[in-house]
Image 1 (cartoon, rainbow, N blue to C red):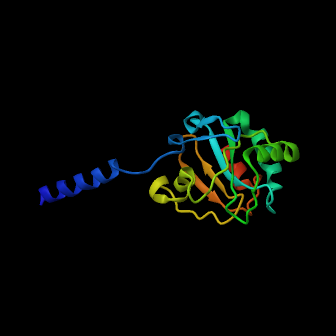
Image 2: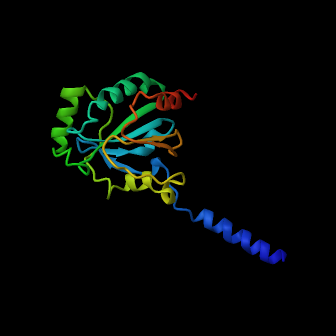
Image 3: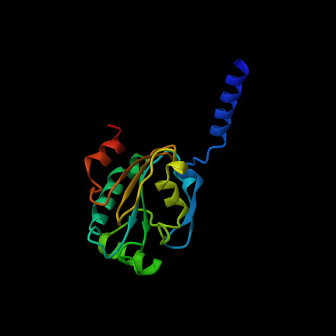
Length: 177
């Protein structure tokens, strides 16, 4: 019986060490300007990741996202935007068009990444799969979905488009309340 217990314990332990769970810090991508971006550089920072679109009813959330970034960037917090054309074709422009739009219309200074497809992006596969992130399964149904990631690169929470960037769920989390 002891041997059976030891064998079972070894099998369980082996399944954990072979885990596919990653952290945000395991990923790299490119910015809208085509520069390499390594998420490992964000160690020690809380991160809000959001899929964006320039022609969406939620596009005015850029104001709240930029305000949030400005308010908390000195407190180890960053907003990361991922432009996406998957929902209603509401981000038809090129990276250059998106950068110009965000800067001119909303004064966006937080990091904006290369335009992606949610369906094929490795980072969004991680964000939406409990098997990969170890926390939850999420379905991105529209633009401006928000994911909160802690200082160690672990997914903490998913919030739908309707949650404003300045919602107290987000600000309390940033402030550690």
